[in-house]
Amino acid sequence: MWSKGRSEALLEAGLPVPIEIRPIRGAKRLRLRFDDASGSLKLTCPLRTGRQAALAWALDQRQWIEAQLARALPAEPFEPGAVIPVEGLETRIVWSEHGPRTPWLLNGELRCGGPKAGVARRVEAFLKRLAIATMSREVAEFAITAGVTARSVSVGDAGTRWGSCSSLGRIRLSWRLILASPAARRYVVAHEVAHLLHLNHGAEFKALEARLFGPGVSEAKAMLRDAGPRLRRLGRGR
Image (tube, rainbow, N blue to C red):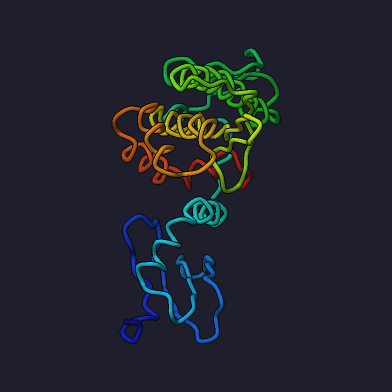
């Protein structure tokens, strides 16, 4: 099963870059790393691990993979003239020194005034405010449908997770989701609200997630998967 072409990096469905699977005699667990030089994933595993099982495990590491890609690809800082997605729509950052310091959206532009040196900080603060306002409303909407209440909703910038839900009912979401398409963002929100009832990914959880989000869960997941690497490098310094 492993003897032919095992060192060749292959592009597998669901993975953004090629992966090379290498069974190692004496290996006790699966281990994944991203090789910057080749731009591919290197997966080592015990000899007894089947190819499909190894690939399934690699797919489960998707968010970690996206974080590695974000670090490897060029950063896209928030600077005058940059074009960034806001709710999935490409939006140009327009700076005017004498304009209002608080950014605002107008006709496909994110306008920002004040000293040029503070543009990136002010744009990020604006996006975080927009993220918490938008996703707080969406959490409340989904929670009503599910018949639950979130104790709190906050935003952060975790390197490998788009969202989390604690056993105490506290939901935390990546502010970067406000850059994604609404469908991709709402999928994550629905996913975390479903965790308020089911802190697992079992059949009941999946049924509730589908009921909250509605048709198109797979498509929304694919949107987020495709956009993820870029979303994670937006706003980073060069």
